[in-house]
Image (cartoon, rainbow, N blue to C red; front, side, top):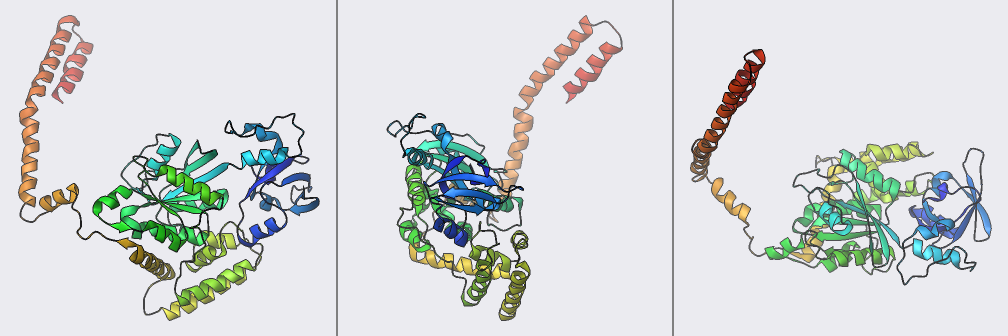
Length: 464
């Protein structure tokens, strides 16, 4: 639960901070770290701000800030599931370390968000780890809402959310807005970015946007068996180190690599994974200059919401993202920030006027360049493109020479099945309808009702 939900006079233990950037750093400096006990002293008459006691001193937070601190009430410690070998805290225990032990168990809850392109295998992975049986279909947008699951692994309780498939984190579709608002409001502990191993260049574009957000993340290289069958080679460990995000090969259909993926999630959550580091997706000198200028203006304004990193917001401002514009409008300095954005946009449009591209296209071009550069050093395509069954069939049925004859053959076969093979069940149905019609004529008295049944309903259905 969130700190803002704790009532006056109650105590809780800090589990994690959901804020970002300078705001998060300030909270840590004030003593809001894992395991610290905090007590709600009083609420202002309008319930905002709220006065707390932590580490022997008192401070006040606005309710909006308190919502970004996840806590567990001391009275709720028995509601957490623990392994048998873990210390079970009894309610009558008077040990001074009780809150700490209670926190240790409650902190073993990891909130995961599954994010990826449509048809990347997110829902299959979700079904495998959570035991759920959600529908999986081979068409875009199969996940129309978020699905939640819960499971235990290696002493941790996992809360996993399968988010709608999306190609980016812009605001052009309901799926994109849903995913981004979830990240804004819920702040999951670890993002599992599911990508298709055989189509990395396209799938990693979404990864670059998540990197801009500066969130804890693990990449699941799903359908890795297809990449291996094709003969291609990928140094996923080196690629993960280059982009600062650990990568784990998986095959969610069979469960291959799922345990290693969950182990990586735990290590990232605990801050123990060596591949994790903050990397900027370089956008080129001119774009970087504009992004840094806007980012510094955002960092200088404490009223800007801390849920997204300043760099991500700066990039989206350049793209004129309406949702980010709306967030900035709540800032006291919004007019100055938007004015600076307009100046930088005009400067960039003048510099890149010959290209004919807008800001979104320029940024996307640089990101794809970053992806291509990373893959050039880590990915070796197959020496010969493997032909699968679908490609072989397509080579014949779309051929100029064989295409039309095959089409005519298939159509003739369909007509032959309809009239030749279909004549047998047609006779059986006709005999059944005639028998039913004669039975009505034999046993029903003459009149309108008999005519309706025999000539109308039975006759009509029999004809069809």
